[in-house]
Length: 92
Image 1 (cartoon, rainbow, N blue to C red):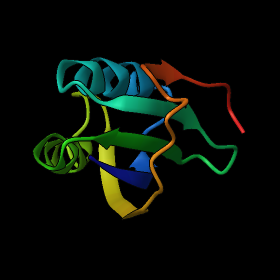
Image 2 (cartoon, rainbow, N blue to C red):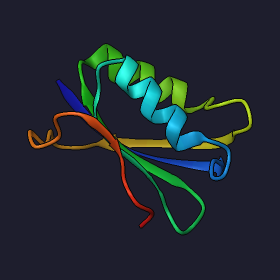
Image 3 (cartoon, rainbow, N blue to C red):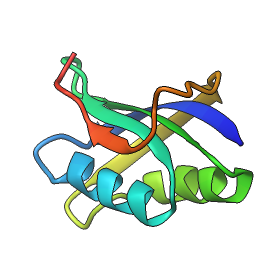
């Protein structure tokens, strides 16, 4: 099991990106969270098996139909055992 913190930039707010991300992460069996940032980007913490995490990072670069993703910046994230499901969090 691995964890990653993602920062996603581009046209990723007001296009259904968080909901799309949540749905996709749940389908891949990931735990973690996703939220908007006040700077217009989206951030997420994802954790799960290596292949599912890699798949989510690749998918994050496309997003839903109305999104235009410029960059996905992943970095290592320690596993948080308190994250038992995937959730959408308030904007920070």
